[in-house]
Image (tube, rainbow, N blue to C red; front, side, top):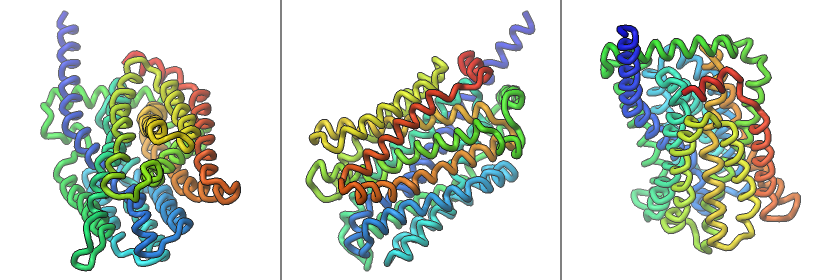
Length: 438
């Protein structure tokens, strides 16, 4: 019985450690992701103002919106290796300060060239944040709660769009003061939020559980041992070094799946405000921003509950395929639906393209280990190039087929195809067993 008591005490310490870590790091990183996605997506809210004030054309906007993802995708891989080497305390702070400054600099856009350059710089500055946070969460949370914590972290996406719609709309409505237009105030204020959180991150984050002064000694030990045991299991089921990871066909498939997810995400993020504006027959501003928040509220609830469901039933892959397929079908419907039905379909789209992502990330994070995990998460993150491809692809389809809906139909077809690919990509047998056991 002494051994049983020791096991029970260890489990209790592990539960306390997970609970404290969830409340501290999970909440902070989720709020940081709110700021990150707000700065990444606010160009969509500034679209009409940039066209009127600066003379940005539809094609220039589409290219500039997508250029962000070239540097974002290319710089994520080395950034994650740096984080794995020097720790998140320093590196995440540097990244947030850098992209905050880049976002504030968007207020200086005065033509197509400056628009392109600042979008590229924004991609460089923000490149390592998302893959770095996904990697960082694997340093702190065991498999049994991995889907839930990723879902909680991903709440940053819909919350940014729920809050970002009214906030950006409110800032856009500010009359010109001190020589600044409303869209300039929007970039200045929202970029400063990232800058301030970046400074705070250096004092708030700890690199590993062993460094956390806010955990008791038994909690540190229990959490460290549980994570080390799971990492050892992953070494036996997937690659743990960079070169084997780069040759692994499963990782390449993850990259493709994630790229197509991002094509659906940024089609919604960049164009949902204008679609709502069209449904309401009103220009973008506070009212349109408030209605635009409704689909993201639905996505917030889904992002919180669906990964929990996936953890409980061990069906992350099947659930991801189902909700992404539903989003693709809804994308075919809403362009020709009425205002009420159209808004309902937009809610389905938002739920699908957002909530699928934490479910998706349980697959590679449960398969890769050690340095391969650091590099693999960033390599899969290059799928954000889908965000670069989606806007020009939409414009091309509309021009080629002479239809305002052709671009959305094309992207919807890609989303449905991706849902099928996820459904056919079977989870690694031992990882599936571990997930179900959790």
